Image (cartoon, rainbow, N blue to C red):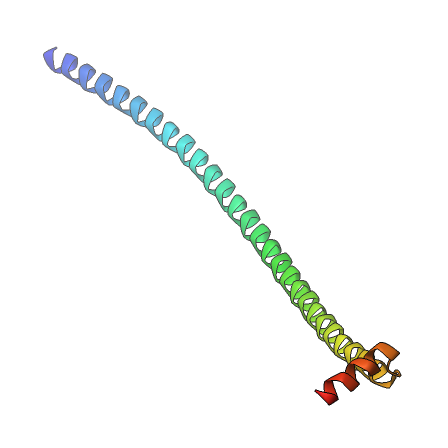
Length: 115
């Protein structure tokens, strides 16, 4: 009888251990599923971030190229303005040199020569 009781206790312990093992396995599977979902979510977010970063870099390079182009155009315009300014100054000097002296300037020049 004691042996039957012992066998009964052993069966009960084994049943209880199997039950707990099944519960632990079920919890482990649930945790694994959650972890896999989280990993997929993280991978998806990582891909989205990488694509956004790539798009941002393309946009930055495009803007930088456009700014470089505008800077070159500004430099060309500045050089053109400088050249036109020099040409205008030269033309003004030539016009001034071709104008006849005013009577006042003639008198002043004659005084300077006699001094």
